Image 1 (cartoon, rainbow over the protein chains, first blue to last red):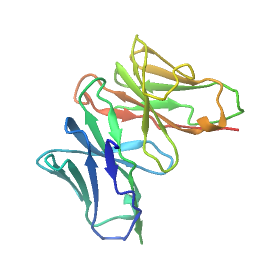
Image 2 (image 1 turned 90 degrees about the horizontal axis):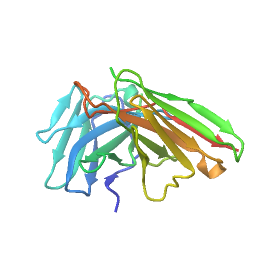
Image 3 (image 1 turned 45 degrees about the horizontal axis):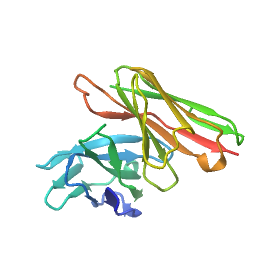
Image 4 (image 1 turned 120 degrees about the vertical axis):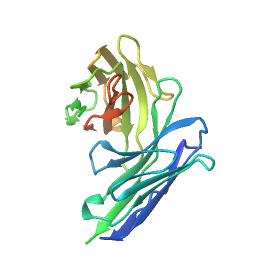
Length: 111
Length: 118
């Protein structure tokens, strides 16, 4: 079983739409959660950390449900520049604390 | 903010060639650096964890004699793909974790190296 599972998409949405991505993780000992954004042929870049109480950064809202081991990302008022692959990332705080990446959900915002 | 520099960004080489990729943390110290590989339409897969001054820890299935890692200082780790073959063609990304300050424990990524072995 994969450490992190995501719906791969693709999601094709019009500008201004609201879109939500989901992610589940398998290790209940996971301590840190993130959403990264990866543009084509580029490195992943941290979009936002995900906190237990849920957190918002502008048009982006992240939620964490530890009981269900479920993470979500909501993007409101989609912009063309939001087109990218969104990676759900989990860190298990053992050993070297490395990160586990989901396969990513591809989003295309259409004019 | 913290920056990780990875070089080269793109390599095309003949089969059997060895390729060296450098990863530098530019404005912070990183006792631990990570090397990932990403095949098309797949997620990043951790290859190895590089610890300054000690041997790297390799993930299962990654050949340590083929992917040589050296982490000689707190700001530099290198990955050498020895005798590269077409199946080694991939996107290699390094990552460094800051050990102090406001950025402590945040993991930053290099821009990646696209390796194409002919």
